Every structure is written in C-alpha cells, then in structure tokens.
Length: 128
Image (cartoon, rainbow, N blue to C red; front, side, top):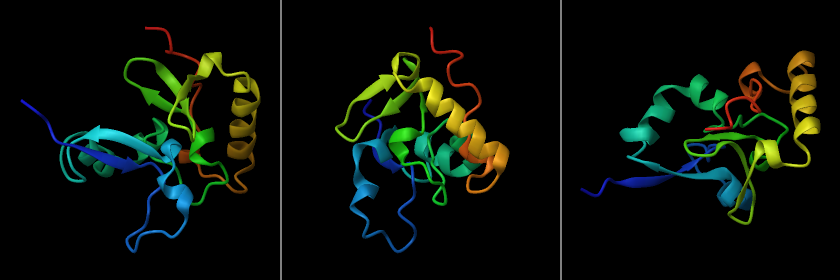
C-alpha cells in the first residue's frame, strides 16, 4: 500500500510563510512519510526537541544554515545535506572536525545557539 509522503522544512517557514528563497533549498527539505499531523512528519512536530537533536529540525534562531546541520539518516547515519540535492556522510566530510568544534564552541558560549542546536557526537553510530 502506498503511504502518503510530504516535504518537511527543517527550518520552519513560519505560519505566514517565508519570502526567503533559501527556505526551499534541498538542504532544508526532507521527504518524510505522513502529513504534518501523521506518520514521521507528525512525529517531528510532536517531539520537537528530539527532532532537533536528530537534525530533522533546525533552529530558526541559529546561525548555522541547514546545510551545516547534520541529520541522522536511517541507512547512512549522520549526513550533511547540500543545496544541490546531494549529501555527504559526516565521517567522510573534510570539514567534520571543524564543524564539530564550531558546534561545541557555540553551545558552550550560549551566545547565539540553543542547546537544541547542537548535535551530540554525530560521528558515533555512523557505521551500520
């Protein structure tokens, strides 16, 4: 049976929408099952802190673009999505060490990022 799927914006469009064209870049979109109230898409809305930790959502107040925020992929582990529609496994990305250091520095300073904006050790658990 075919299950309904929907585009999920990792950084929300807000209730009135957004004029920012970056909101619809591939790095900000996930194809998930369900609707905003059912299936995986509904789960993301119902569990925002966990969705943020897994990279399914990105803080609207954060300094990092969605392309710099890893997402936990069901098959490939932690990946970075790019704006061309592709992805890179985080352990294979040349900037992984710097990305993790930047995320930890921002989280420790608390200046611009929230605790939900950080990703706990994404390099673990990438091998299936």
